[in-house]
Amino acid sequence: MPPVGTSTPHAPSVARTCAAILKLLLPHRRAADRDRSAPIEAFPEQLRQLADFVAAGDPIVFALPGFPCKSPSPAKVLGHLPDEGERLSLGFLNDLCTAVREVYAPGARMVICSDGHIFGDLIHVPDHHIDAYSDELAALVRRERLYHLSVFDLRDVLGDLPHDAKRARVHAQFAPTVEELRAEVKSDDATLALYRGITRFLTEDTVGFEGSRSALQRNCRQRAYGVIQRSRAWGDLIAEQHPRSVRLSIHPQRRGAAKFGIRLLDAEDAWTTPWHSVVLHRADGSWELMRRSEAEQLGRLVLRDGRPSHFETV
Image (cartoon, rainbow, N blue to C red; front, top):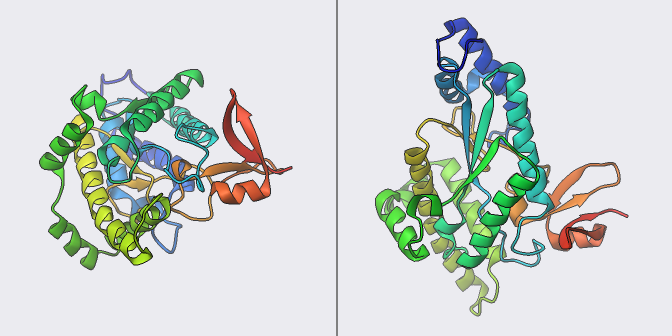
């Protein structure tokens, strides 16, 4: 392999290298397809994105929106700071970048695009909790020496503006209209699944709602559209800030989609993430994401550095 950025490899070599990199991702794919197995050729967009780096001999940049903040539901999580779920997930992502170097000498790095502030008001998580989560996430990357990872959030773009002003500015510049999203939900199965998944999460995570169950569901359906609007806006902002990247997603994605869905840790539900759950460490050495209320029935609480971290089976 020539020095980074000095020459362009031949096309067959580029194709083989891109295929080898994609093969590292495929075992961890979070799929929206019923048939989760798919050949390399089913992901032309990812191959194209990878080829942009490989043909130039540049390190690959992965961009992953996610790691926003902890769920406000005490039935799901241990608190508002990152715990073992985030530690294991970040370690996995760093290991993935390390593995890329084995098949592509310039290697890879990953930008964790922490998106909590963009919709914190809609998911009812206070901004100071989101700040603390993102700061601890960056500290975790440093402590664990995860040299292939970096954390990016709204503060890196808009600095010390009030959080509401930041959200309003990004929404105004990038968000689709509610009418556009309603039409998409009606016509596109993937968008409908996303809308239903977010509505379910909002319903489960809402604490202290004083109205009826039907009123809560109406409220969450309305907020779900807002979350999708802001998520789309955040995606466009990432594209502006990191225009040259391989786009990953923590949501299930269909083959051929512009983003590649990545599974961080094992869980029964494909939508489960470390920020909506806790980790249970089983006696066989495996780790699984689940609700705190479920993990408490199966194991004992483990502390790390004096803070609640995860559960382990006895």
